[in-house]
Image (cartoon, rainbow, N blue to C red; front, top):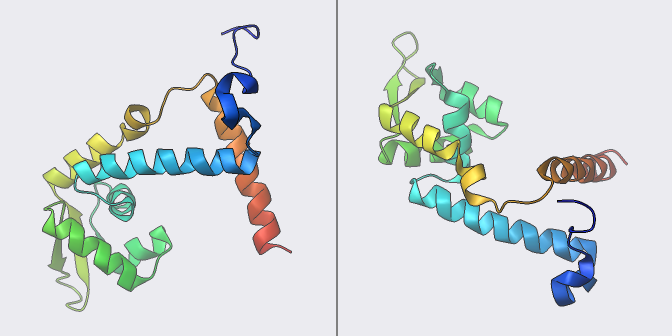
Length: 151
């Protein structure tokens, strides 16, 4: 699309007058709803998707998985409970340490992960310059993070 064909803010009706924060918030909610619906169809939550991603092909224990996800062990336990109910993981006692469980992704879990890997392309609306959007979002996140956690 050349510059003469690119939509102008006024082409978007009253939304073209909205403040940037409202536009970002509205876009975020729309994308999040579509994302959550698509994950729900796969029997996954956002946390479950993260766990399946981090689990990969190699078995691991719950404590290591929680640390890699940067969540509390108890939070990971609830996520793994749901994944286990859905048949996406197996939890077995560690033969070397009976207090620990070894987590393994099942074939169903691998299939769910593979299906979820294309969700972004399947769910998000096509936009004219996705790289510019990603760059702007990363810039916003970095700036917001710096202001929030590094006064």
